[in-house]
Every structure is written in C-alpha cells, then in structure tokens.
Length: 297
Image 1 (cartoon, rainbow, N blue to C red):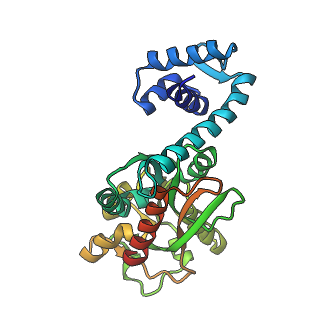
Image 2 (spheres, rainbow, N blue to C red):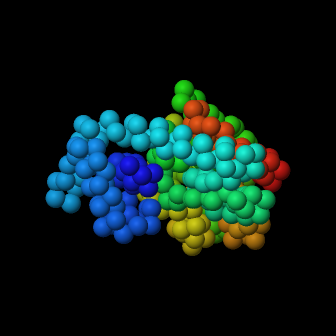
C-alpha cells in the first residue's frame, strides 16, 4: 500500500470519476485505474462498484475512505513537522471566492511565494462558496479566503478580517445615476444583473422584495467582469463588491448609486478545519493574508 495509491483513492472517492481524478492529480486515467485495482487486490475487497461509466463506493470503500483521510492527514503533518521543522514548507491547498481570486489573491500569493519558496501552493479555482466549506470539512483543501456572512461552525476555525463593502452600480446614462437618493422602490422596471448564488445577492433581492419593488427582469451572469461590462453597456444595474468596481467608478465608466436602504456588506473571512494541525506553512499564509487585507482592504 503506497501513499500515491491512497491519494488517488482519496480523490476518486470524493469526485467518483476516474477521469476527473486523473485530471486533478495530473496522471493518466489508466494509471489511476491500475493503482486502485492494485489497492483493491491488496485489501482483498472492491472499493468501488463500476456501473458503466459511473463508479460508487462500496461499503468497504466508505470505511476505507475514513482511514485514508486520517493516514494522509497524519502523513502530511509528519512530513512538514520533521522535514521542514519551523520553516514553512510542504504543500498548501488554497481556495477562494471570485472577488478574492481576482482582486486580492494575486498580490497575496506573489508575496507569499517570494517569502516562502519551499511551500508548494495548490489553488482550487472555480468552486462556489457554498461548496468550499464542504471541501474544508472533507480535508480536500487546507484554507479558504471568502467573502460571506459571518459563519459559526463547530468544525471550522473562522478568522474575520474586515467588512467587504458593496456598491450598487449603473451606467452614466441610467436615470438612477442622477438621483440624489435612491430607494429600493426606485428599482421598479430596472433590469438586474446578478451573480450566481451568494450572500450579498440574497440581501439585495430581499431588500427589493420587502419594499415591493418589481424589477423588469433578472439576468444571471457567471462572473463579476461580465456583469461590469453589461452595466457599462447600459443593460441594467448590479450590486458588486466595491473593490471590483473601484477603478471603473474612478474613471466614470460606472456610477455608484446613492443607495438609501441599509448598506450591504459581507465579511472577509479565513477558514480552516479546527482539527487541522497549524503547520508553519498554514500559519504563514493566515498571518500574511490577514496583514495584507487589514492594510490594503
């Protein structure tokens, strides 16, 4: 039984797809299949049921999954503790929400890699915020940087860093841009340009519902950059993290509406599992990220 085989099994047991497992780990699919078959032969029992192109865990696989997570977790801690001593080293798996990925994380990661070159950073992109916490609980990532409403968890450690202020924006030709005061009811007959599911979207829509405002329509877009382009083209109004539109507001391409309802804000937060060992690499990332955000916003 090899560590490589356990890593392959751990990933395959989470995604239940050998092709996706191969892509995530950088192996050929045939190598994933061969190693898992070898592991099953050594254990003397199948870990997966093959149902055409689908795979599902057997009961033995579900039991083995727990032990695999424990073994790999302890192995990682041992390598970092003994191999790196107090100097940050080893692998650190990171995930972040779109706003953090685009506007903060590049600066943080550049600084981190300069200061701690022995740490190998693995970044998991394109994951919805609601799924990131699950990945933390399952041990698939080590730390996450998110903007969302305050979270209380019995399984996760949460460090609140700063408010994430929001801006409700429109194009310069929209009549709302000229109003000195804009209330939720003024959104009647406006088209809303919305992100996918997130806390500040829900808060914005709730304020409109409470006021009885009836937007003309809603258009859901995949990312913040697409929404900004649609706002500038006059297709509607949007609520976005202020950091994401600061440049366009300064240039006059987007107007921040003088919103009179309670302001929306989420919290910039760092998350990691409470049972995870605070390795030198993890501590260095948490400390550096906190310092950057508190200093730069």
